[in-house]
Image (cartoon, rainbow, N blue to C red; front, side):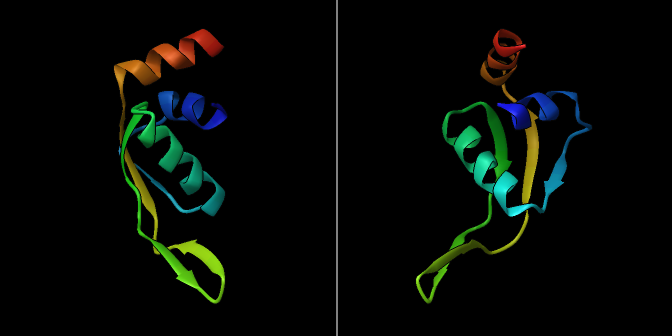
Amino acid sequence: MELLARLCCAHLPLKIHDLADIEKCDVLRAEQLIEADVPFVLHERGRSAFSGQATVMRVTAKGLNAAKQRG
């Protein structure tokens, strides 16, 4: 939810490079709190990694409400 709060105040669209934040974007997108392009996950030698950066286009109304309730 910390990332969601940061995204509410960010100038969008925003590119996300940090792997941990990309994972969080994937969860927020799945919950329909943000609209984002999240890269594919590559599986190699028992490890998983995202194939690039994520781009957050907008925080949805549902995401804005969730951020307000937490704030």
